[in-house]
Length: 327
Image (tube, rainbow, N blue to C red; front, top):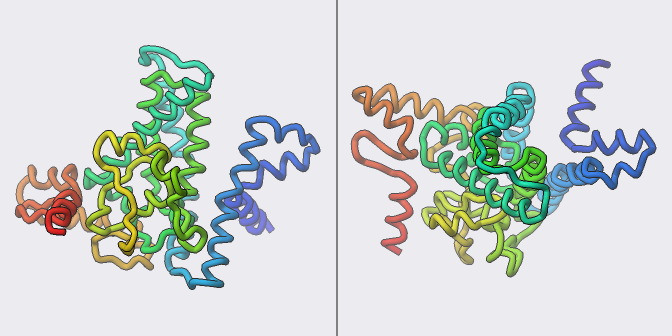
């Protein structure tokens, strides 16, 4: 019975309805008008959309079941291995860097906009480094391994990626004067929307969202980010506001008539949990072991994926540049 109780608790946690059930059980429905109450109603949206997406795919398109299978295993593994690490890192960074902020913001709408722009800058830094530094790519590649885009992909992360990401994003925000209360609100909104942009074509075929495609980052932009097409490689690093991609020249819109190829360029078994989760770490370890000299071994850790000590580089930057020059 204890095992069934644990499984039920995990299922309710995955669906995001634990807090809603607690409010309904208390009978204090006025709690739904508070911040926590509103958040409790928003949490279940993405998990329920994920289940609906899977059902629709089974009925109409036959989705890649291996994608859902591997992402489910990753979710379960991460729940046991890295459940509290990210929360601890956020609290640590807030305590460590708050004293060094040159000024403090207040809880007003204009400071909220400021906080969101700053958060996106921190997100851009973490995400950019995740693609441009081989060691960080080992953490991030798990998220790019699925060869189909759907909402389950939002759960496909190496367990150390969230602490690494939140350390950078939280540090940037706190040093920029963002108050912790506002930071948590931004994190909640960003996390919810960041899950939604992984929605697949089974649910939304054309995810450009009309004129919004020019103003914000849409699921269409994020499909581009997850693609291994040479035109799309290492673009669209932002999450909701695409301002920093436009500032740093990494913005790319989805091209009509170009079939999107999801996944990573390394040959791999996308249906294998071990290859999806640890494959890039194994590949890096082999490259480091084969590299001559300490300097080259270190370069494999910090240079972009595709860098080679032989000079035969196949980095995303070079592949994309060659494509643009030859088309």
